[in-house]
Image (cartoon, rainbow, N blue to C red):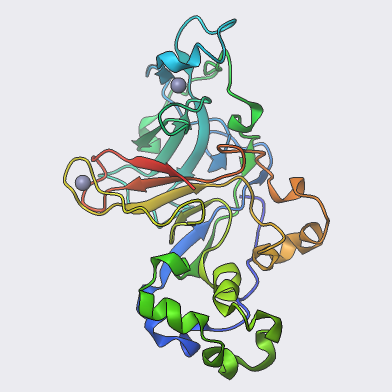
Length: 302
Ligand SMILES: [Zn+2]
Ligand SMILES: [Zn+2]
């Protein structure tokens, strides 16, 4: 870790206005990926993995690559490191057994039927990896460059999130839409929000943008879609959000203190240090089963 990023305090304590939100608070760890030279012993986005030299590198042999990359693609595509997270840096992770390291890779192609890159997850014990694979294979083709993350170090920061408005009860949604309920906050909430104060909640008080572990899902592309474990039927929980930016003009208040000068620039590129573009500007949410880390994960584009 050689960077620090600090989310500015929220403009107000939303639970003081809406006490029903208090039990819905969830911790999230914002990852704040920033360009750097991570080693296999660091948490990273797009960095080198602590991968055992004697373990086969994961490849994707789905047939759908051919249509996009027919010239080069004669066989399986080497999967690409997306994130490596040590539990010491991201203590919200719940590893199985003695594992203390999570590795996430994807195939750099959007697969049918839902046009998302398939992901694989590996849990490891770092001390068991003594001989590290020095030169992992690289993919012979990619859908587009946004699926090759630029190597970034992380500045994990724990924050508190509240649900996206669409994840709330109809009653609470109605209360958030009632401007009179916001009067107690005084001038903190500008009266220009009066016609739609729930949008103020959505943009500034609920879900943090950008790469994160845990927290609440960033809905928007669709209404909330509940995820259920294929092995045991349990409701799945958000593990990792892979984002196509960390802030934009609607939520610049989430830009860390250290990046406020960048957030003031009229440039979108500075808000996306890993240069990842999932499904051309959306997010990929990975979900896991709360009952067992051995049950298969799932993913969703938002
Ligand atoms: Zn593939
Ligand atoms: Zn399960």
